Length: 207
Image 1 (tube, one colour):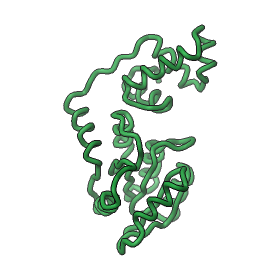
Image 2 (tube, one colour; image 1 turned 135 degrees about the vertical axis):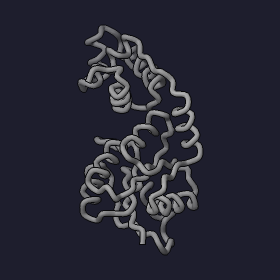
Image 3 (tube, one colour; image 1 turned 90 degrees about the horizontal axis):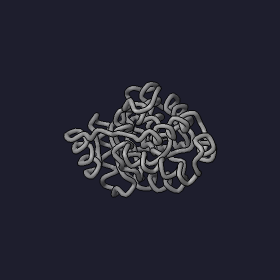
Image 4 (tube, one colour; image 1 turned 90 degrees about the vertical axis):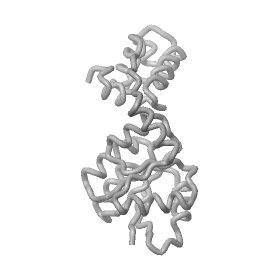
C-alpha cells in the first residue's frame, strides 16, 4: 500500500486530490496538511511514501518544505503539485529534492501514475514541465539585473514592503512594483521570496 500525504493550504484542493486518489486499491491518503510546518510534523509522525506538495503556501513555500521533508525523511518522495510552471519555480523544486513536478490540471490517471511512479523511485514530471527543464539545461540564459532591480531585491531580502522600499530609494511604490515584475521575468519566478532566493543562488545579490 502506497501511503500519501497531501499538503496544500486550500481545503477544496485537498478534497479534490483525495477524491482523485480514492478507490485505488494500492493508494491510501494518510493525512492532510495546510502548511509546511504541519507537513514536516506529519512526515515525522507517519513517514508517508509520497508527499503531494503545493508550491505556494503562507510562510515557508513548497520548495523549502520539500528540502525539510527530505532532510527529515530521505525515503519519502515529494511530488510538487502546483499551478506554477516558471523555470525558476521548477528548478527550485528540483534542487530542493523533489521527485516530480505536476500541474494541477493533471488528469486523474496522470496523478495516480505519478504517485505510483514516485513510490517506485522514478522521477515524474509533466510533459510541458519536462520540456522547459531540458530547454533550460541545454540553453541556459545568463541573467542580468539592472542596478535598480538589485537595489529593490536587496531591500526585499531585508523584509521591507514595497512602500518602504519606495521611501528608501526615493521612488514611487508603482515604480518598485515595475522593477520587481521585471526582475521576476528575468529570473523566471512569480513572487518576491523566489526572486530573492533565485537571485542569491545565481550570485546576483549579496548573501
